[in-house]
Length: 338
Image (cartoon, rainbow, N blue to C red):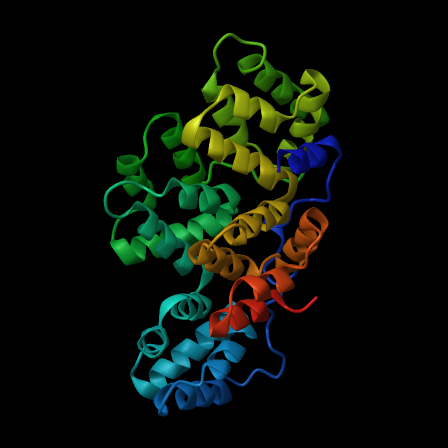
């Protein structure tokens, strides 16, 4: 896989879609002629009858925008005095339940729930923190922080301070505090300065100045980082990812590499996550569900294109051959046929 990212660093890419407006490059789109009453009636029929009509649930939840689904959830509660998510939990099970519940929730609530799960109990699932905080925009992080506070009555930053430490903790907290600049203007001279600073903090130095890597990679805008990555290759003859992998280790390495990958191509980053969730024996259904739901309305069209480009395989077909039953059918609905 490092060859793929080497190739991406060797030429300028189309802008990362991490900042694309919701719905522009997604496969889950708003339904035209949307009728909330009809949807509520259909969901009630599917959930209240003998046996659950899974196809109706999947059809509605994969073919409505997030705002439409929130309107459905509100009307459903008004009509039944019940919460839609709770009824979905009661009538489905396993991976399908997780998938349908996530589809019914607002994106920020999903992110908050996934983070809560990652940091509850003994130990922290840093992979989830890295994926979510490394790939989301400031707006998305503010929204998930608000959802987190509502759910836990604590601030995300307060909680993270007690969960993560060291240089990795510093980097995660910068991201959680929305320290990233989000201007779209790129100053080539400043990008060159940052590339030199990174080179002198790592490859050119005995020992590594991690704080310089954290400051630049967690605070600069994604377009600026893309230019910095290109300048770094010109200065050092190595890709920035390779240098990070050589100079830094552990969770901080994983986080900084994820940021570099997202700066180059957020869809390629998620295509790789999907590939890894399905390759080998068994399927990581938790990651598969999280990525398909979180990117379904954002950039799934671009992820599919990157998946085909990188792995020479159709994501839709890969899902079909890797997971079966209603869970697999629902994932294919999110993916959309080629």
